[in-house]
Length: 122
Image 1 (cartoon, rainbow, N blue to C red):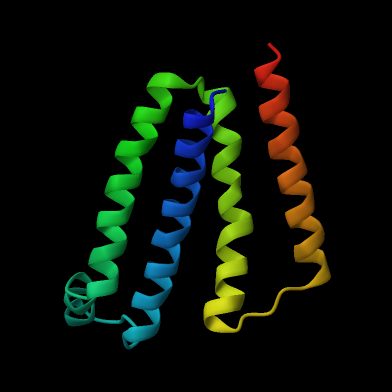
Image 2: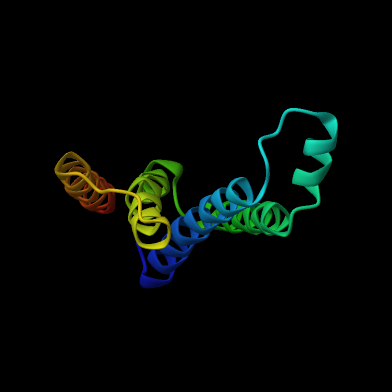
């Protein structure tokens, strides 16, 4: 993979994670959704709208990436969300990171490196 392709894949992962953080902010800023009126409030929530826009842009980027990179090489980068989102949640929302999470993060990162490296040699 080229440096540009890796940069696009990393951007995809970061944008996807940012969307998740925005969804959490939307969830935290609203009362529990139990009625149609609550749903309307959700759809007019700025964080929710920003998350939807972020996901739309991320989807466009993903299509562009897949025009240049085989899916089998690109898809492991989607797993970076499992690393980025909980780390951001710990920083932004004070959520706990356990030793099991840290081990899982290491295994995911190792898997991405191995998958990307294995695909590059084929």
